[in-house]
Amino acid sequence: MRLAELQTPCALIERSVLERNVATMARRMAELGVSLRPHVKTHKCAEIARRQGGFQGDAGGITVSTLAEARFFAGHGFRDITWALPLDPERLAAVAELQRGLEGLHLLLDDPAVLAAVEAFGSAHGVRFSVFLEVDCGYHRSGVDPGLGEAFELARRLAESPVVEFRGLLTHAGHAYRCQGAAELEAVAEEERSVTAGFAAELRAQGVPVPVVSVGSTPTMSRVRDLSGVDEVRPGNYVFYDLHQEAIGSCRRRDIALSVLATVVGCYPQSGRLVLNAGALALSKDRGAEHVEGFRGYGALLTADGSRVLDHLRLTGLSQEHGHVQSFPPERAAELPVGSRVRILPNHSCLTAALHEDYVVVDGDEVIETWRPVRGW
Ligand SMILES: Cc1ncc(COP(=O)(O)O)c(C=O)c1O
Image (tube, rainbow, N blue to C red):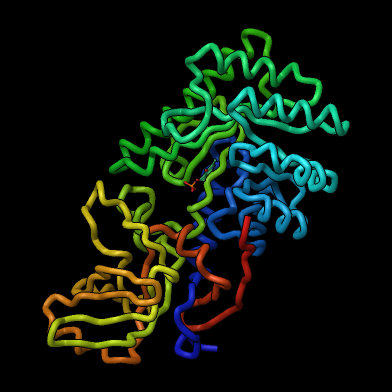
């Protein structure tokens, strides 16, 4: 099958780019002496997760963001899974059931009330849970502040709890997405490492064992130079990368493996407008790295074969199923009459990928296969 025969809109994965991204990250992390537990929320797809396992064997440890992902990947032979969202105690019964068939299902929390709920459930049902303490290394989304005594106390309680197997410390430097350029990314990567490894060292000095120090985001792991004191890393987006990653300096344009193929369904050269059949539900409304370059549109438009950037076109607006394109100068809109096809590079590939039922894997013009990800929570 050829690209031209595909129904649009559809999500395309350029196989060679995906495989290069996966191999590059695996090699770098092996060189830095850490194990890779990739975050599979970017693709939610077993075929990609198996490729990410790479040097660790077919079904290595992974990180997920939902229990639906955990169940799906367990069903595909992944036996060691970290659920990297602060634990909702209401899901403990489901966790207890799922973990029975696994080598490990690791949870995270940052709140003594959640630990109390884990202990109550564990004592009542005779089960133990593997739990990370989530640490805030500067992102300020979730996690304990390692400078506070409460953080130390919660780590000690986790280590001493009869119901908990204390897995260690986990952090995510999401603030790296606000960086601009390699030097800033390297500084945030070093902050992520030093805050977490430093807290682990303090705890160990006080007799609290910390088995695992887990860090990682795609921007930091794409630029990090030193991971001493770290055991494992959890980047996810790097399999696809995207325009945001390019703008902040994590990747090059040619590293972007995911795109959306769309068709022109409206052409209005008098006003310089085109309408595509790819709207917010094919692309997401992520606005990209506005702090670096202002708003550049909801994606970058290329020719359908991906070979040429159409930089006279700007994807200025999205409604649910319409993509609104403006041509500069207006008359050049006539170059893409109704029925023409374009390719769109996404601002944020995780969100774009999550909107598609299938991924079409391509090698240039050739359609290789279709992969089906998991959806839901
Ligand atoms: C806890 C956690 N770990 C790892 C990741 C992966 O980071 P990235 O998406 O930058 O690859 C995320 C992403 O949000 C995350 O929330």
